[in-house]
Structure formats: C-alpha cells, structure tokens
Length: 255
Image 1 (cartoon, rainbow, N blue to C red):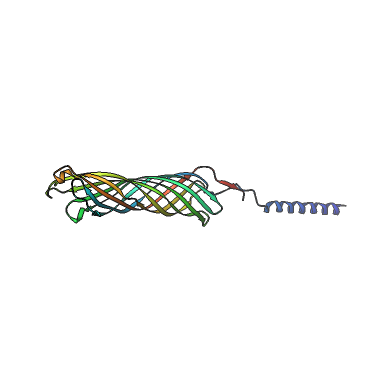
Image 2 (tube, one colour; image 1 turned 90 degrees about the vertical axis):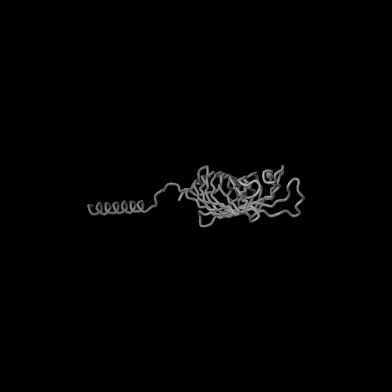
C-alpha cells in the first residue's frame, strides 16, 4: 500500500514540475510597440544656405531714346544664410507618401558687382523667401522617407545702385528700390523618423523667378528728373536641414 502511495506522490510531483516548466518557457506579454506612420499634420524649423544670381538689364530712361534689347548692367552672384519654419500634412498609402507644405524663411543672401564693369556698383540683397509645394515620396529602409517636391516661391529683394565719391556726376550717391518676385521650385530631400512624432530632414531646392521690372530714381546722376527702368531676374539654390514634429499619436501593435 505504501508503495502505491509513494508512486502516486512521485507521479503527482513530476506532473507538477512538468506543468511549471511549461509555464516558465511561455513568452510573457510585452508592452505594445509603436508603429511609425507618416500620416498627419506637422510643424518644424530649418536652417541653411542660399546662393544664386541676380541679372539686371537697363530697358529705358525717361527723357532718353529707347534702348532696343536693353543694356546688361550686371550678373550679380550672391550668397548667405537663411532660417525659418515650415508646416504641412502627409498622407501615407502603403510605402507611398503624398503631402503639401508651406515654408517661410528670413534670409541674408546678398552680393555686389560692378555695374557695366566700371565704378558704380549694383547690390542685391534678398531678405525673405516663402514657398508652397507638393511632395511625393516613398518609405525606404523602414524609417526613411525619400521625396521630390515642386511648387511656387516668392522672394523679396532690395536693389541698390551706388556711385562712389569722385566718380563723375552724382558721385557718393546711391539709390535703391525693391521687388517681390514669383517663381517655380523643384527640390528633393530625405527625412528620417527619429521617433513616432519627431523627424529630421535634409533638402535641396532650385528656384527660378520670373522677370520683374523696377524703377530707380537716377535724377542725381542725370542732372535732371529721370527714372531708370530695370528688368531683374533672380535664380536661387537652397540647401537646408531641419526637424519636424508630427501631431497625433502613432499606430500601436502588439509584438
């Protein structure tokens, strides 16, 4: 009888140990893991550099004969820094991303060159840039978005014509005017998801602006009331880096 009881006890003990071992090897439930999604509104900031040219052509002077085809004054190379913010919305469908974005930046992109290759100088200084663009891209390497973009741009530029002291009539005098030009933009970039809400990007844009006409009061140089009409054409390249914060929580899944 004792033998039977001992055997039963051994069997029960071994069964309990086997059950406990099975429980020990089962995978425990883990916390939900965040799954990144690019869909949503975002806002952010950027900084970078701009460089390009400002071409100016004298087309007419009041009281003077017409200038057929105009006279090229200068092609001014300019460069400098910029910084600002952006906001937009992305929509993700599988690996594809579609979005719209608006940017505005203050800038100090300027340059000075001789006008007509002689003493007077022509200076162009661009102080702000705004863009509205559409973006199309795709997700690669899990968290990286590679995209192209295109749209419209507006830039404000101050133009200055200066004659140094001792250089003919009106020496030591300068006159200025400003323009806000509209143009088209093409760009490309890459953005990396640092977390479900934060991302960092690097981007290059090429912008070409329409021709704009400005008027400069050159009476001091002409010795009589005179207005010079000048065509201005800007081209600009921009390289920038920045960060974005996406609103809304991430998608969540159990792993």
